[in-house]
Structure formats: C-alpha cells, structure tokens
Length: 255
Image 1 (cartoon, rainbow, N blue to C red):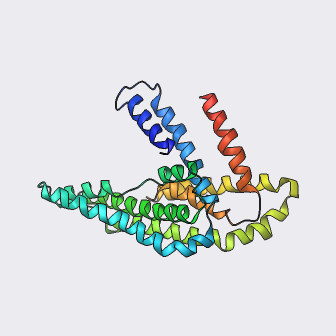
Image 2 (cartoon, rainbow, N blue to C red):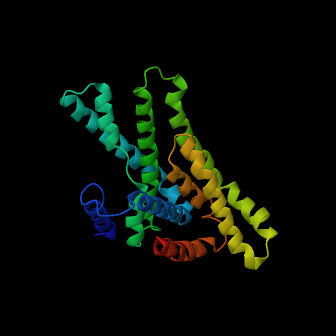
Image 3 (cartoon, rainbow, N blue to C red):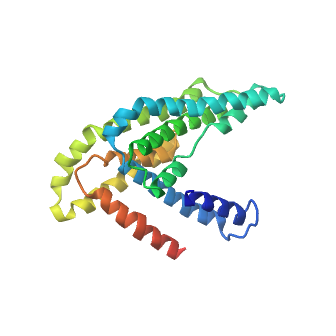
C-alpha cells in the first residue's frame, strides 16, 4: 500500500482527534500545506499534454461521475433519514470532493504520476475537486437568508473559467512566449534559475487569484506547474531536485 496510508493513520492517532500528542499542530498543518502545494506543482510540471488530449474526455466523464454519484447518494441517504432538502444536500456535498493531493502523492510514490493512467487520474481529480468545491460554495450561499443571484454563479464562473482560460493559455501561447521572449533575456547558465523564478511568480499569482474567487488554490498550483510543463528547459528537473528534496528537508529540519 502507499506510505500515505500509514501517514494518515499516524496523523489521526497522534493528532488532536485522538492522542493529541503532536505539539503546535497548526504549525505542522501549515508545513503540510506548503508540502501539498509543492506536490501539486510537481503534478502540474509532469503533465503530459499529449496524453491529456487523448484522455480528456474520459477524465471529464470520470470527474463528473465521481462528483455526481456521491452527491445523489448522499441526498438519498439524507432524505431517507428525514432530512430536509438543504440537510440532504449538505450530506451529499460532503461526499463529493476528492483529494488531488492524496491522489498525486500515491501516484508519485508508486512511480505512476507520469503515465497515461496517472495523467487520467490527476486530470479527473482536478475536475472532481472543482465540481466538489462548486457544490460546497453553492451550499454556503443556500444557507444565507437573502443571497444575491450572482453569489450562486461566482464559484461556477471562477472555477471553470480560470481552469479553461489559464489551462488553455498555459499549454498554448504562454510557453511559446516564455521560450521566445522571456528566456532569451538571460544568459544560458541563468535560464534554469529564471524559469524557477517564473514558476514561483505564476504560483504566487494563481494561488490567491483562485482562492479569493471561491475556487481551489490547489488548482492554481496545478495550473502554475502545467504552464511550464511544455517549456523546453530543465526547470522541472531543477524543481524536483532542489525543491522536493533540499528545500523540504530544510523546512522539516528547521521545524
């Protein structure tokens, strides 16, 4: 089984839900969020656009089914137990979201991330997470006394709008602009550092942009990585070697 299963069990047993042994749990959660962002960045960097084009329809079908089937099941369970529609919808919405971070971690540990099956799972998880977050955001609007009509559409527009616009731009014209306009500004020996700086800039822009528009900040991390995935540079190797190993080791050593 993936080591992630043992990590989840250890976190549950030692954390606040059970033994409450871990000190400064919020700080550890923050470190975990940083690692999760780096993991999703890695998934975006290793995105294979050719494979994604071949599996896009399947990923959309799997993601939609993975959201709607648990939603309908949860609504049915809620109604069968005497809940009103809002209560049943809350139960169904809590069943819908998956975890792109968990899927990416399991695939990465098994060496399956950059395979056709791995790319299909990652793409479907992105779609599933977007749909799940839209459902949860809409439920937050439903419980308000007098919500505005636009509040129902903000999560839908921002999630799919940014996913389509930024995702399409990130695999079409932005990589060409990076190759033709950005990288030639630097000497060859500094181009890897320049690419890492650009990757950090995309990440710092996309994460708050999607978060404050009621979408998932993890989708922003994935889109930032996907934007440089098709660039003809060694930024992905530098990222994996420098960030995944050296940087994260320093973070945990410091903590």
